[in-house]
Image (cartoon, rainbow, N blue to C red):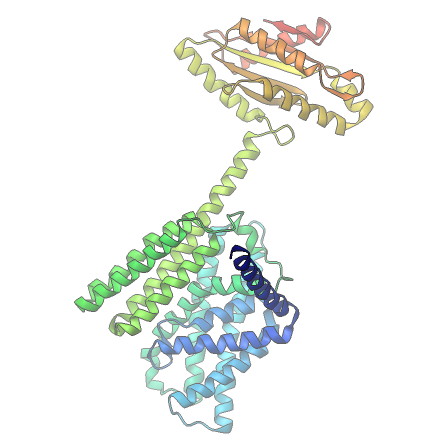
Length: 489
């Protein structure tokens, strides 16, 4: 049974991948899919239309914006054909009775009015994503602004085209433009990112620098993701049932509590799963507006899904910012070659440890060591061998230190070891143990690595500079005493 289930699953995966590869390799198939998808989601938007030519949201706006961002001008003819088809359907739906030239004029005007603003907006956003120094929060601000401006221009142009082609009375302009605009904007902000994620898999040859701004995130959802989704969907249902049974405008504002689970999802899940959760929640809101007859509160729900989506998109930046902060900390606190503490971090930790040890009257020792004849190694065998000597030395020393000890690279081939709660006798023992183990390293055959080590014990008046200077003087005396030895001050 398990083998049959596995075989069935494998065939299903191969079937899905086969279709994806077919789409990736066939421009005609991609064009057909885009056309059918656009007309299909236009029909879905029409199901929740609450005034002529205006829906709770307008998904085709999001698809148009996303496909123009990914594909560019090549998608314009397909979008124009889609515009002609839906204009014909609209003509029949509203029984406007346009024929021939009038219908063609209306179709072309609608296509131009719909495509131009989103083409311009997508090109501006695409250009911004190429800017390497653009941060993710700033990119999200630009996306929201571009979405709002593009949707507003599209609303004005499309309504104007409907009036010019006698598909809408001039008097309807004042009551239509605002819901039209918010519906288009919601379609872009809520569904645009989801369509972007889907389309980029159909066009794998495209490279989008926008992904550089998101940073490295988990490729799968957490085990708790399904419960977060259920929580957000349950909250939508409860908030909208409250509005249904109270018939109160004030109760409809409870939908804004949806921002809480979506902020949680955005801060704890992959960006893609955050986008999926937004689409699911907003889809349920749109469905319930129509099912529960809440059209009197439709503007509240339009604003709610837009505001929740905008907040969730900003929250995507939080994991990216945390990841970037960790990367910056690594660059500042860790030496890139030896993966030991950097000079800055070493000094910072040493000063902290000195104050701690002085307050508690605990011993604290510092070791300074460097490789004997390191310049000769570089000159004779090359800097690659010299770098390998530094890395091997670091790895060896780290293995011999205690968890509370800290190894850092002070500069060049000079290293410092912090030994908290350690007296001078124990510090000397540790230093000699390091010396013996380092002598077993042979980067070049029959030429063991050797180091000189200076040891010093903190006194009550020490700071880092004085403590380091004393240990460095001990190191200098070890060099004068013949190298490959430990000297104490």
